Image (cartoon, rainbow, N blue to C red; front, side, top):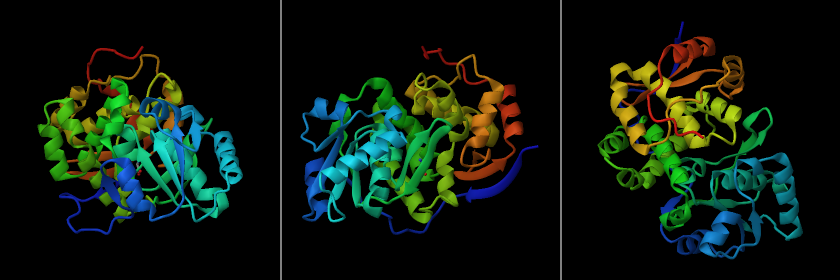
Length: 342
Ligand code: GLY
């Protein structure tokens, strides 16, 4: 039996204002960085694709991508920073996608026992989710983000000009995380459901980032309501680990959202499924999913196999029993969209 173990966000959501854990600003990144650096020496670490596409001058270049999120890459970056003479009075700035901001943030949290850092996300996914709220991590062969830390940045700068070089499928990934965040917040939710195109959804990215920051600020260490942001991620992370690099994070989360929407919202899931369909990523898992492997990855997830489930009224609950959840997933058809996974 599925058991509801915890209410993460009550019906109607949170109504009281909260002090943000870090600033979140939108604008030309060079101007914003000048304000936030407050005269400190900046050390800029950039992802190769972004450095090339926007002709940036940086101190250190990283390969980018999920494969670089390893302890080996973290060691190399820490060594490069120490050789470059970094100290705790510097501001370490990461410019790139979520894999780059996760890695640089992790290295900033442990090098010299902690260096101030600041991410400038260059993907929709990092803008609305990965770079907000101080979670940093690298992967292990056993799963994603299994070694990491909480290290709040000095701020996050959103500059949508940096999205122009992003391939279409990657640009769509962040819109999935936007839909996920909107499930926790009525005002954003209504705008997301009313958005009829990907352009209208993309215009809501900064609002999505603000909602995430608000949620994180209530629970910086992920012990309560922040866990609502793991909607779709129990199945999503497991699929991503099983099919890396064939399935991207956004694709895996899109697929993972389908069963929890149906479990938690019943008929009320339909407008949300339509919002996911508008983004256009596949919503069915690859045919050859191995049940036992999927279950093993789901149980290894940091929530111990518990599943975050959206409920009516923009509330969110944590339900237990991964086996029962998997049976539910198997018994339910996933949404039928063209199988675009190669
Ligand atoms: N990506 C979910 C969180 O930051 O809590």
